[in-house]
Image (cartoon, rainbow, N blue to C red; front, side, top):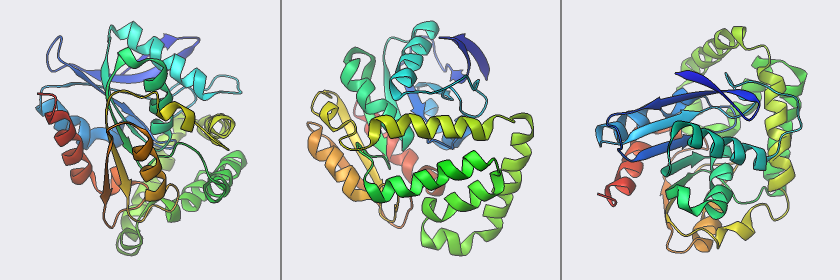
Length: 276
């Protein structure tokens, strides 16, 4: 994993080539997720012969936290610059949550760069109930208490079964998070800036007007127990992107990528297999 200076910030990324010239799969993180959150899916698609690219947005995890405010447009231009710098003309975009919000308008504005889309547990507009949840997360991040932030997010991220059965796992994840953030003192300020960026674009109509401009093969994946962006939001996306397919993962919550990695990887692999 490396860092590259693009558009005035140090961008942390992981580009792995299985073969020069092979098609690329790009992974776009959720707001609190690092590159490693895609490990299972990335390993799966590399076995299929795809090169993979993951990165962290301006202000996220190991990428530099520059002065704000940020905008989603800025995220998209950062991504465009990263692809240029790596010599990647086109990729299959796989985005979850915040990553889907970056991917959808990008596909509408830069269609030549997007071979296909997989949109996971995301939305084209933040409705009021979802806004109240993410605003609560933003306020916790603003307090700078990582433990309170993590504990405030968990009930909205996982299915009820996972929350009941994996208390020990959640404790380990909190310990791991606190350990990782020792070297990232700007993590919470970065989270505030990221939240503020998607409020500006995703409230009210969000990016709904962009959906009809997307002209690539699209798979929409939702999680049955997603409280934050429920299947209703994914249904709206699938109904407004021409030819999109929608799959609901049973018994999973918003963090379906972390909660059901084999299922998510299988869905991504099946989508990509149609291009061979």
